[in-house]
Amino acid sequence: TATDRVISSLHVGVKHSVKLDQLAESSKTRGSGANKLRSDKPSSASASHLIGEHSSHVRLVEQAQGDSKGSGSQSIWRPSWCQEGVKPTFFVVNGNGFPSIVDTFTKHGYERLSFNAKNDDSYAIRWVQQTWEVNFDTFRPGEQLVNVLPGVEVLSNKSRLLRCLEDYARTSGCQLDFLPLSKIASNPRGLLQGAGELLGKSWEAMSEDERVWIIKPSSNNQGTGIVVCRTCEMASVSQEIWMDGMQVADVQRAAEEGKRSNVKKERTKKTAAGEKRLLRPGDEVVLQEYIMSPLLIARRKFDIRAFCLVASVRPQLFLRYDDFYLRRACDAFDMKDLGRRASHL
Image: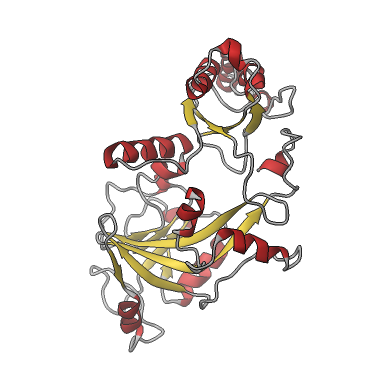
């Protein structure tokens, strides 16, 4: 299918001759504990491709192997402004897994800057959690390394990603036939209008429509705020996604008065469906037709978590990590219960 072709084209350690349905079928025989699938390649990062304009791919494996020969284990990258005999410095924010990151850089010969040096721009390497933690106005390309990319929101934000795909399709002439029907909305009325436009139906006809949709807040993660519902339920569901004007005013008033407990209580207020209402008017969601017959592993939905390192953007150098893993839903897929989040996320 088109989806198979798109996913199988990703370099996630799967042989091109192995189809996704074969991968799913083979995993069933490995037992319930087989949550991680590996390729038959070595478990290491490799310089796989130099990604140029469109389909221009240049193999860099030989170059990477050649560069590694003759360089001692203590050889490290240093910017030109770092004097010989002086250890290049690195800064790591107090975030996820930072002790392991500090340990790795230190073992390779880098000197750590303290947490108090968060505004010090004299680093060689900077490891952060959020893009805004890097000052790109003072960043020196080619002389400093950071682990984030400016403008990555066009990929990490769901509505911006959809707009990016639509713009690309419009300018390149390609078809997004692998993408389910999708629409962006920022309020209840826009959500209903979007569904009507995708279906080509009036609201009267939509009130009897049984098509299933998934509604995903653009900026949330870990499944927060996601709703699965039928067209005929969308009117009532849409009222529970966004806070109304009165609630927003209450939150702002409590914040101004310094009543943090009230702010927390209001922001975690639950709807009748049990879902936290986190969005304010204007916050965007992506309305998308739900895939009714997804590929399953052990009767569960899954996604693919793969890794690559953007080592350079000029020229564009992407390093692929050959191992990947699948994240499976906790519960078996069941279209009879759309409210069971562990089955659909």
